[in-house]
Length: 177
Picture 1 (cartoon, rainbow, N blue to C red):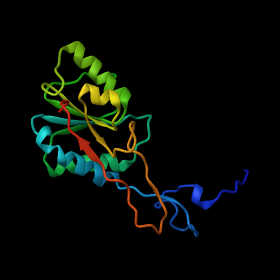
Picture 2: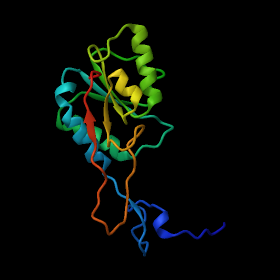
Picture 3: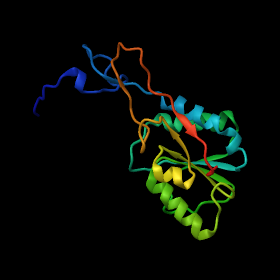
């Protein structure tokens, strides 16, 4: 095994994993569970017209466990019927269901199949997507974003002694819910 020397301020680490490390290291400071929960609460009025909320959590892509925890906390607190599925490739969009997609691949798959089935997005079924992009804006997709990255909510790096926190997320309401 080769040892690599690196400036501590150039190597971001998770505070959960490096509690015993001494020195001034950058830390990835997140609380995505709370952010996902708050984002879902902010669109409760749009989600209430659907019978079920489905989190599409891809099996081969890493997302923090906090995403699922925030989703489950929202569903339990608001008494929402929910499901978690790994992929949209083998599932058809179900009317009266809203989907929370984390990847653009799952989002595209849902939209493609729903269009073939004649389901109207925002009326018969809904979608909430992670991250904003120009194409999502053109398609009228409701998104959760920090507004600083067009493809995915970014991790925010801060010095452990800094009082900075992760940028809060916002929901951009469009016609897909």
